[in-house]
Image (cartoon, rainbow, N blue to C red; front, side):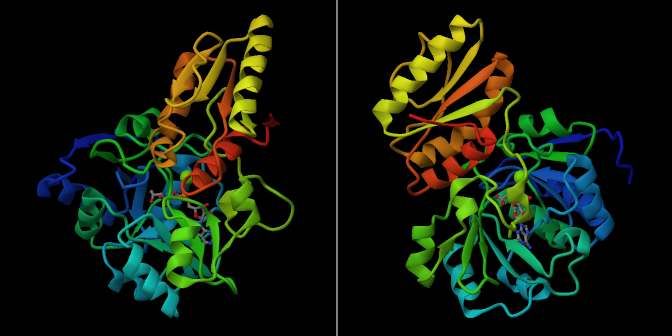
Length: 355
Ligand code: TXA
Ligand code: MG
């Protein structure tokens, strides 16, 4: 199949009861080596046959993704995991039983069947079973495991609607299944089970607290907590790239909530005085900043899961508002707030202002 300009088929499906015909067609495209974007409970994924190295390579070209950043393999049932991973350990079994289908990708030792294009040459593979009827129906229809990164151009915010997918990838992929907006809104938690102590490499919908409740000892990789690149080696190759970034530079303001509000107001005034168009990322339960900038609200800061659900759409909204810079209000690193702050710190590329 071509991988330059293709005409991208738009296929609308009912997320509650995906139509068999539409899903069969999309599954066939994947089985034959093509690329199909589809909704999951986290964000939209860009799927290809995970057992076909050439198909996986096409994902990297469509996204402009660095070749050393491995893909997550999506399955529709736990039986398929033994075919992809070795030594599916006791902890893996308990975690799959507790959290699958759901936003938890498990890194295990890879079987030989997994092509190097998928693992980026690593000896490990990340596997997850998504909790979305369209995703599960698609994987079953394809009858192969489906490798899928988020369906955005590399470096852009992940897509939470089919419209976001087309903004980035129209003409670069074979089809998109539109099953409506995704629920969680940030990518899955990535947990490395090959480390001496299971280690969260990317925070997501399943929190470290949730994991500790089930398997006891869990570490959070310091780079995952900070969202910044740190020194040293990166266990999840994806952690070293600038990510989730809107077009305008984003400044993340962190500190006590009162001090953050004062700092944002002060910075917004100064930037406006300098002739800049200022965007402010805030929340419905925060101070009203509408007199000092173009405000985009993303959920309630007291309920970080509501912020996660709206975060990427909010970041993309700033592109439409054509702002020169964005001041983002930081949240507490607690519960899903850790995943939100990880994405905001990455989106800031290190422009963190302490209030
Ligand atoms: O929620 C999600 O996980 C979404 C949906 C589509 O399922 N997918 C997603 O994929 O976010 P992607 O490619 O955007 O992020 C995959 C992350 C990257 O940070 C990558 O480096 C890491 O998982 N990863 C994948 N395989 C790995 C491995 N074998 N070892 C370490 N890190 C791995
Ligand atoms: Mg991604």
